[in-house]
Image (cartoon, one colour):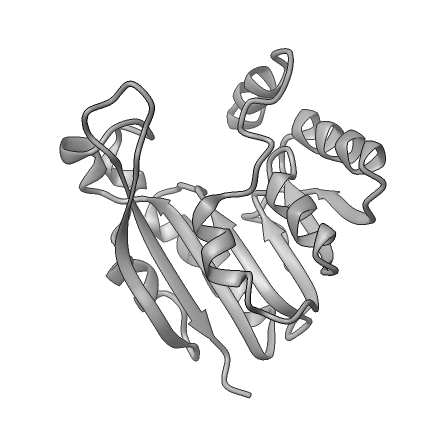
Length: 197
């Protein structure tokens, strides 16, 4: 059911999300040397394509075939080599210890389900690799703007940090995004973690 709903959203003309990469992603990974990257819940591929432009070898994964088709089309138009895979993250098991960067941006499930995805994301990190998780913070429902309205699928930075076993937490904080035509910012949770070299 969820896949059909997302396919319907992605079927609208143009891009559902911005063609530009996430601003927090840019801020957190611009200084990292390119390597292998895994973009989980990649949507239309804006973050994967941005990484590929900077020399990363990228695998993008999403369960919406419409989003994956749009991502592949953009990659072809921009002549960027990105491997896009169609898979449900609750079933997808990435290659262990294979990636220098693993992203999970704005992917929201109840914590007992999200825990499975986070554990696999952590396991996919190579020695010295970085994981970046960003999503709508639980406080956003009452204090921010936009995003899901169900607190059961939102989280805090500390909750995400606790679900990244074996990783060194470099950053776990709330971050704020200005939103057009809103007097309040959106409130996100950002966690950056690293596997020891």
